[in-house]
Image (spheres, helix red, strand yellow):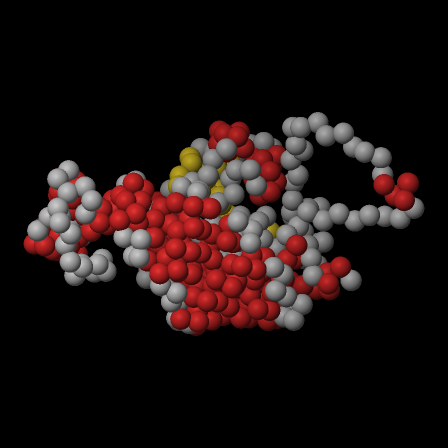
Amino acid sequence: MNQGVNEPLRQGQPAAGEVEALIGLYNAQRFAEVESRARMLLGVFPETAMLWKLLGAALQMQGKDALQALQNTARLTPNDAEAHNSLGVVQQERGQLENALACYRNALRVAPDFVEAYYNLGNVLSDLGQLEKAVLSYRSALKFNPNVAVIHSNLGATLQELGLIDEAISSCRRALQLEPGWSVVHSNLLGMLNSSSGHTAADCLAEAREYGRRVSRTVTARFSSWRCAAQPQRLRVGIVSGDLHNHPVGYFLESLLAQLDPARIELFAYQTDNATDALTTRIRPRFAAWKSLFNLSDADAARLIQADGVHVLLDLAGHTEQNRLPVFAWKPAPVQASWLGYFATTGLAEMDYLLADETGVPATQRGNFSETIWYLPDTRLCFTPPETNLPVAALPAQKNGYVTFGCFQRLTKVSDDVLK
């Protein structure tokens, strides 16, 4: 917030002492007072850029709408790179990506070495599907500061989308070197390793176990006793997932829930995101309780689950998005298992089982998991037919004379080796 403080005050601006007092309040994190005082002064001095800048920053820190304040700041100080960048952040949060793009480019026009603006620009370009340009922007940021973990992480994710798996792995490893305890990036790395033909199942298991060791070291008091009844009339099963909505996991789960007897099994949902839709509405009545872990720390989430007296805790994510595997390291339930949303090991010593079938995990492959493999009969998946009536067309092979294969997977998983 010091940029522009020493600029000469224009005619019709407040006294320097007034602005300095506001800066002091801002630095003391008294954001509500900054907002109130800045609004009062702007009523008298509406063309004072620093007042708009302080107001915008105070609004942002309070989670309030700062768009107008930042627009005025950028208008009054066209050569303030920080102002353009801050305006871009607000535009990006509002989904106005093209406007955000222009703001970040204005910031870089003024300050060609502005690392944060390059990073933000890369994020918007990635959201717009301009992946090659996003990579160039991230790399420009790293040229000026190579020690920012989040830039390496986002670069890795973008390279993965481009199918450049080995380069993506290198970026994730660099991010973890800078922030060794960043479990989300470590999960991303494990997903990439499983997509790489250059890494064996043993490599993936070793990295997963390293993930488990790092996460376990963050636990201050692992549970060794539980509040669940030893011989319950109903088994209380907790489900931890960020996919309890329009997502493959949600669809595979839906038909199974309808077959469970609520007199024998009591379900608790622990949602790790805040997304809801029609599928959420349909499955929610199947649960005796529905609780959010979205804004809870791992420790608080584990305490919540342990207090609920859950007998069996199911992870439906593995190392995919919105996972809360670190919560399982606290051992909030006496029996913990991973199922459905991921195909490989979690690497957590505290994860007792992985629910599988003999097709997905042949007996010869059980050694590639840190968990005990528990085989379900026939299949680990239970498809939910869509409500939409989709007409089935004639088989193309009858006309073509050859079979056409279709794949609904992410293309990054369909490598040359997979196709062979």
